[in-house]
Image (cartoon, helix red, strand yellow):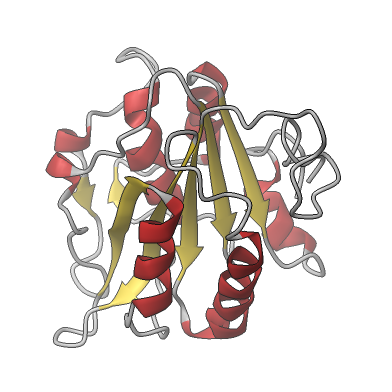
Length: 220
């Protein structure tokens, strides 16, 4: 992506550029926990550890974590989870580095997670469905989110820049009824208050790239 670090780290080397001040920014990671993602998740954690010394200002940058395709050990159904609402870097890293969710899900509800997470950044007229009206379409394989959609809310700050970073090796998917589509998300992202979305996906597979390309402001 083009200069995701602009405003503080324009060359993305993990070091704050001279004479640059970090702007208030809320960063939400949405990470696919399917079985094929174990190496990618380890790489994300390793990269974040390298940035720890530079992005630990709790008053300026906050970090959050949403997981999709998290398999429930009792039912073997998949769900999406708010693992960490927006918080300071130290608390975020503690949650990320110690989470013990299985990495073997198969239903990557990334579109659903994006929709639920940004609905409070747009006006009521831009989001076509209130969260209370959405239901799961599949009788098996997918279960209610945690928290439930009725209670799902990311604590975005009104005076901050908003960034979503998606890590997945599949196309965007929805298991809700009505379904969350690419066009719905494009309209919402465009109308949201200071929101940018970046997706890290399989560069070798054009079909997979196309599943997220139009949602991003800088490409995949």
